Length: 280
Ligand SMILES: Nc1ncnc2c1ncn2[C@@H]1O[C@H](COP(=O)(O)OP(=O)(O)O)[C@@H](O)[C@H]1O
Ligand SMILES: Cc1ncsc1CCOP(=O)(O)O
Ligand SMILES: [Mg+2]
Image (cartoon, rainbow, N blue to C red; front, side, top):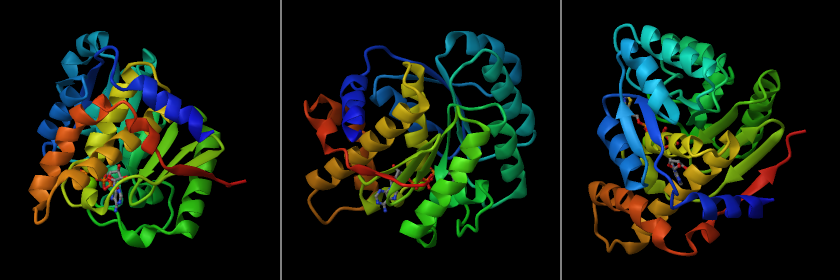
């Protein structure tokens, strides 16, 4: 079954066409996100003024809603964009950054979920908060205390219950290992390196890559596996190429550089590591 995904990875990247991705995102990582999309051959448009949404929606291939840095009236920006995309069936990704930190983000995430996004993502602590499980998330960061096999299975079951109410959304929970839940299937992905937790925006970039892949027609399940695996292999390759000592900023740049480079290696997709878990 994992072989099916290897095939998806192989055919998806390099992209055969450039999807235009409408991003409503946070001010912290907005530039990193825009460039990450360009590096993989997609195109970003950051447009958060509601009167523009209809025009922007007409020309874009997917929508990304990131809760990372809510400004005044954010509810009046993200929710209308989400409703409109739902009406016209534009594939949408919701990134629930920081929902373990505030009730406002929690409420907004639950509201956006009702519009049936193709993918709802966050780190493992954020997805635990979303499903009302105890979460050790701190600010926008996940906690190692929410990792571990028992916690992953507990989260997979909780997401599976959510998925039963809405079978169209794929859930992505990132961390040292990543969990993807779709319907009653749960997949654990095992690529990546610890340094990917040490610069800001790694989760946001994974969200952007996923939205780009939704924009070229991959479903939520395929886009999630492909985006996480590609990004984490970029991190692995960056680490492999750097000679110590090097700082976190150097690693960040090397990882972002791999976004345009790794896919030019003919067998990159063969490094996919993961396994399905039983949640019945
Ligand atoms: N310790 C780690 N080991 C391997 N990969 C990691 C690790 N921490 C994060 N990653 C990877 O970095 C990306 C961002 O994950 P994460 O840090 O959980 O998101 P966020 O930035 O939203 O908190 C994911 O692709 C994840 O697999
Ligand atoms: C530091 C910070 N604060 C609000 S959003 C943000 C960036 C979060 O990026 P990521 O979710 O990818 O870690
Ligand atoms: Mg991060």
